[in-house]
Length: 233
Image 1 (tube, rainbow, N blue to C red):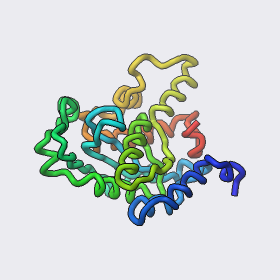
Image 2: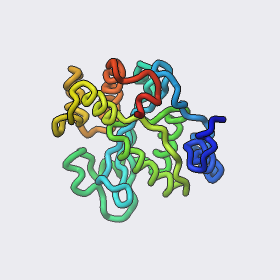
Image 3: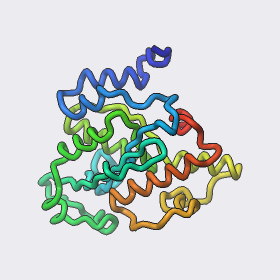
Image 4: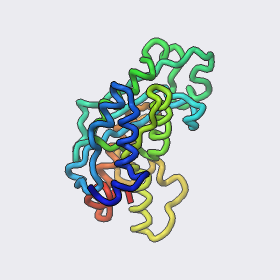
């Protein structure tokens, strides 16, 4: 065991505490499988690119409307594992609200096609077993997934995450020695610098795939790094 693993609030200790508190089921199974270690080479790194469409930006008050995810294995996107799942909303009368103007999801659509949050969360956790979470501005995804785990399972798991926004920022500053232009680190602007195709935004699966493609472009850059630790600098 490494010295850092013995620290009271180390990721390893927090994961063990969450595992001990988790009820039997998908969260327990997710926590029981070790995530990639910091020295995992990029070529061997398993990730799950995730995007959430939500009613807003605050996990304390807003709700998940859809989840899209696609596995990334080393330098390869595994489309066979891709999914887009709508989330049925609680019967509070709030509905999707004004967020419908962004993602296009309607109350009728999520009511007809949506699965209960607990089921969607468990499917997502099962897909993430043994993988790091990959997202563009991962604080949003980890914040909402943490809130969902707390609501459904009563436990807040630690996440191992890779953020393409952070990597893009680091590579820009390394190349230009200054701050990037405003808006240039948004997902679609970052993709454009690599000549990646333009997709329709604000569909959870499309955005997850777009993040995965951007990640593969970023890790080809000379200063991206060779391990998970490098990607998280």
